Amino acid sequence: MLDNETIFLKLGGSLITDKTRREMLRAEVLARVAGEIAEAKASRPTMRLLIGHGSGSSGHFAGREYGTRQGIIAGQEARGWYGYAVTAAAAARLNRLVVDALVAAGLPALSFQPSATAICQKGQLCQLAWRPLAEALQRGLLPIVYGDVALDMEQGCTIISTEQIFAYLTPYLRPRRILLAGTVDGVFTADPLQDAQARRLSIIHAAQIDELETWLGGSHGVDVTGGMLNKVQEMAQLVRAWPALTVQIFSGETPGAIRQALLDADAGLGTQLVL
Image (cartoon, rainbow, N blue to C red; front, side):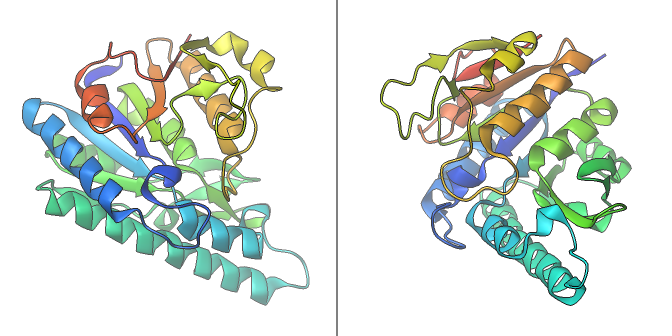
């Protein structure tokens, strides 16, 4: 059974950073978003909230430069592992800024570094310490996870997305809703940042995902974790496994949207992914 009081919220890298410029924080947006989360928590104190964020222009630029997601190349081990460390450091710097903004807004935010416990197999997350997160939620803390590097038993290393982390944690923490807040207001028939004729889909059923592959492409800006298509596929698989789960993909650019999404499951923002 899913827990109606538990919500996973992702702050997309495109929302809190300028993904076209290396390590460029959108500080005003982050401060506003942190305030909205604080307002929502104050309005509903029983809400248990796990927050994740993308690496945006921090980890993605480094990850692409060193090919970290694809793993360690034979004969280039020294460069590959250095790139792994550089990418991890970049992701952690952004995480520190996110946590600091949430704490400044009066929230008991606590960072949990995914790469400290994550183990992957050919890019798939198969191990992550979840009990500390569960205990933190029970004690009223706001655990913060993020897109990060991870050790991989087959290819040496990889990069795991926030969506992969959410998917792994769902069987243990049982969220009723997953909210993905980015800059694009849902899932469209084409990239709305490049095609004015793109049409937003208000509801997508998990069974439709295969039909949407020709529409959904990569992200606007640098993204080494696969863009919108991979995000929707990951969430569709999760909804199939947990039929009562709903996923909302919407824009956090509009002031008040994140607060509304947290407090109102029927707000109708963006695109809802259901069974």
